[in-house]
Length: 84
Image 1 (tube, rainbow, N blue to C red):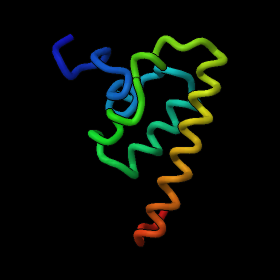
Image 2 (image 1 turned 90 degrees about the vertical axis):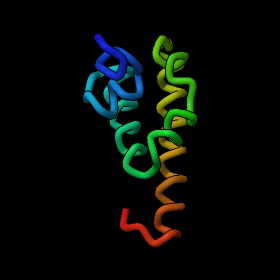
Image 3 (image 1 turned 45 degrees about the vertical axis):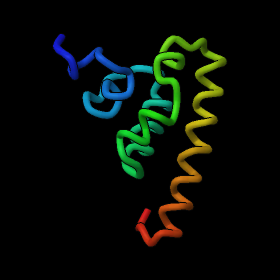
Image 4 (image 1 turned 180 degrees about the vertical axis):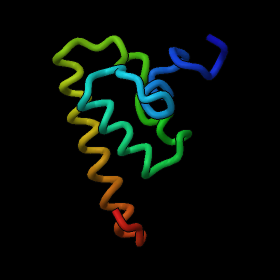
């Protein structure tokens, strides 16, 4: 597929193409986070390819990290006057 299409990057696969990449929980958290920050910020947040090949236990840790990041972003958004 041409650059920018499905399979090009795990993050765009989750956010733009709604594909299952990591697991249901992580993918949903990534989509929620993407509503609160720019794609550029999201790209820089994690090593997406490292997590792409993660084991089940590493995915569980990734899910915890995503939850923590989402909660922090929600607090920041509310503090800045967003309705979350």
